[in-house]
Picture (cartoon, rainbow, N blue to C red):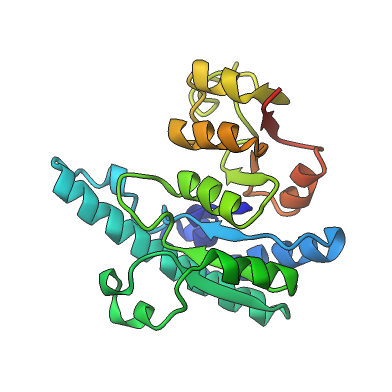
Amino acid sequence: MTKVSGEQLAGEQMHGICEGTTLEVAREIVEFYETTGVVPVLLPGGGNFVRGRDAGATTAVERAEADYDGMEGTVTNAQALTEAIREVGHKAICLVNVMPALLSPEHRVLPTYDRRIARDSVRQGVIPVVGGGNGRPYSSTDYASVVVGGETGCMRIMKGTNVDGVYDKDPRVNPDAICFDSLTFDQVITEGLNVMEPTAWVVARELEMPVTVYNMLQAGNLLKAFRGEIGTRVEAT
C-alpha cells in the first residue's frame, strides 16, 4: 500500500493537480513496479484540495460535510493518477470507496471500490488506485490506507510525507529534531509521534503491518524507502 499525498500531485502550485508533476509520480510508481515486481495499491490524499479537519467546521454536521468534500478531492486525485499511470504505459484501475449518491455526477460513473476487484487487479499486474479514503467522515486517508491495505492483502504501508521520516518533534520548527531509523508501534502511540493519526497506528499495530514513513517529494525515494535506505520503519518489535 502506497499512500500518495495530495500535495505531491499539486507540485509547486500547491493546490489542485499539476499534470507534469502527476506524470512524474506515475513514472516513479511504474519504475518501482518494474524494479521490484511488487504491484502497489495506491491511495491518494486530498490535501491539495481540502482537508475536512482543517475546514473550520464548528459542528459534527459541518465536519462531516467538509470530510465529504475532501473525499471528492481524493477521487479527483485518484482519477488523475490512474490516467497518468496509463499514459506512461501501465495498466491501472480507479476504484471509488464512497457511495455514488454522495459524489458529483462526473464521479458517479467510476467503478465502486471492492476489495476483491482490487486484489484481482494486483494479481493481474494492474495497479489499483483507490479514491474516497475510507468512505466515511471523521477519519483521515492515513487511516484509510491502513484499512484498505489490510483488506487488499498488502504486507506494508509506504507513507509518503513532506519530511524525511518520524522525528522526536516537528523538524519544520525545531532544527535539532532527531529523525528515527526505526520505532515500534507502541513507541509511536505512547510518545504521540503523530505522523499519522493515532487510530491508524493502532490498526496497523493490530494487523502487524509495518509502516515506512519517508519524504515523497524527492524523486526516487519510494524505491529507496522500500529498500530500507531512507525513512523510518515502524513495526511491532
